Length: 363
Ligand code: 13P
Ligand code: SF4
Image (cartoon, rainbow, N blue to C red; front, side, top):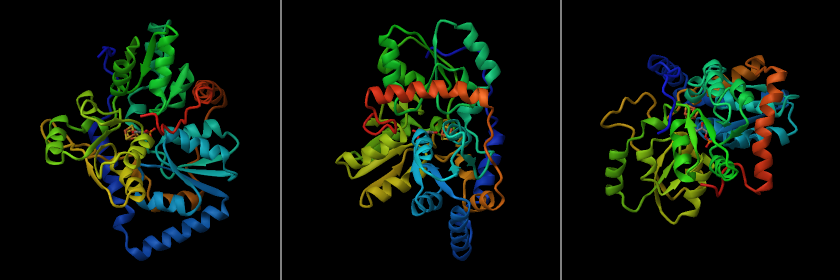
């Protein structure tokens, strides 16, 4: 893998464990049914009072996804979340996801108030790509097109030529490669390596990784497949190469969900955050979904197939943010305008190619 040699900021394991513990302690499933119902009813009232709409990622708690859909909001992947916010008339967008998703929503919707249940909902890819080190890296490669994944800070997006999501990354890099461009890619080394292999593009990769997807284990996945030979293996491309190699379908969250509907298999082994099972089961109630193994040889199980930062979104934190109108996303206008350029390039590209950016059909 053609990654840079110097060590990036590495997310501290104890920090991850403490976030996971906080998320676990606050889980709405731990509250009584009466309290849960009271919270849901109160949130419904507050959404109307505040002229707010909920926009949630597929990895959030089932309670949050259900409430989002019941109240006319949208459960989607990161870019589709922002686009929905742009089209919806509500004055306030409440983004249940992680910080870069709230920031992207604000970049695209500067006139709206964007709130998040917990501003500490980070992402290891974003944390492992600090702007100063990333700028130094870019300076060392002035001839390369800078392409960054959406899981980055607004500062990193502002530095980039292109922002891409997992649903469209392959097509954009293939396009740039055909134009004769060399690529500087950040921050996910596994996604970057997968794209490099598929497109043969000349890419230098920033060495970041997702703490959730990095944990999936190829040996144990092969063993599970032997026990369930009729199951299709679905893999998010933030996973290691050895896991991707075993996949029947590699794609964004939207693409993996779509595969559960279009493939004839009745069983699926899924290598991504287990929050996605809520939508998969809702769409195909008679099919069987299994988590890809993340334990076994070499496992550290810091995340156990659930993003600890996504876990910070729960009914209590949602009610709190709506009651107190706190946790607003505030961004610098100059940075916003810069970041908007690289995001718009992706949007224009998708329109020209008539690509649905949710990744549907683009696995
Ligand atoms: P998608 O854009 O595929 O929804 O992925 C976002 C993410 O954070 C995956 O870990
Ligand atoms: Fe980031 Fe991984 Fe969490 Fe997605 S699952 S938000 S990539 S840490």
